[in-house]
Figure 1 (cartoon, rainbow, N blue to C red):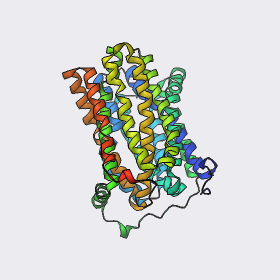
Figure 2: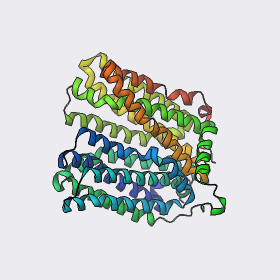
Figure 3: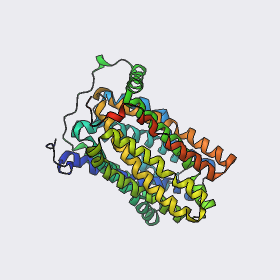
Figure 4: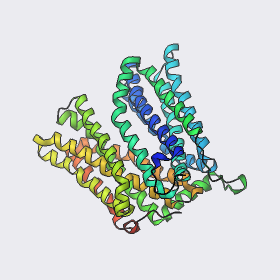
Length: 414
């Protein structure tokens, strides 16, 4: 571990994890673009098939999320991350191989998206549980800020790089770049030298369902974890309701082209980068609790630029661009601190299950929000649906305001 007060940028073992995460993020952006392009252009998929492909990538949150948390708590986290990355690389390489062999089909794409999504979830949960062992609980905000900063940078640069690779290599072979990124990430993570807490032995295990129940109980009984779960679920529910019709609003009501929509969304990546850089200094100055409350409040307030844009169409585009940047910035300030607080207050032996429970609760509302957004878009129109969703997102900070989070001035260890 690095000495207290020194930057994690000079922590050699954290640097390996940081670079591995950055390489993985950039590669994943390539596949995020290439897989739907393969389906749409190479396989001429129908709208229903495109929907299935999209659902396959997000389904692991609900299908295996809670089970993955148990597995992560039963094993050392470092080897789990290495194995998950190698498995993801092998899965993705089946796509260019199938393309050469003439066996590329939409069923294969869905299977790869589902399986790779499950491995990505396991790796992510192991990563979240591994960071405290690597940097110590007093350096969590700095560590998460740095990791989220590179993730945000990948969100900005990745789609452009993905587009270039798809254009140069073709979508099936561009996926192989992501496979190589997973292998590079596995190599870097495998070289990290760290002393992890030994996982529980067989005699200490109480059964899969009992261990899942324990993770759920830890979240629902803890006064801070419970409200963090509620605030994130509220933000996700109304956020997905918003996103369900957002692109339709930009293209149909505002007349933006695909390039224009892409540029608007890219400003969100820039906002994420800014928020990840501000999160740690804000937490040091004001404490993680007040920082989360203000961050989530501003997330809702800055989103109200979209209802204003609906009312004043002449300035709609600049208002939406500003909202995109500011909402992602303020949400990242909240998110970095929320992840750090969760890691700090959760005992190591249940950290995987608590992370999985939080992911399950937050991810479980996403399809509900999307369905509500789509239905309201048909009933009351796109602009009013966006207005309703933005006011809903504003409610998320109330979970934190009326809770012990207000008094959280420093990270409290488990």
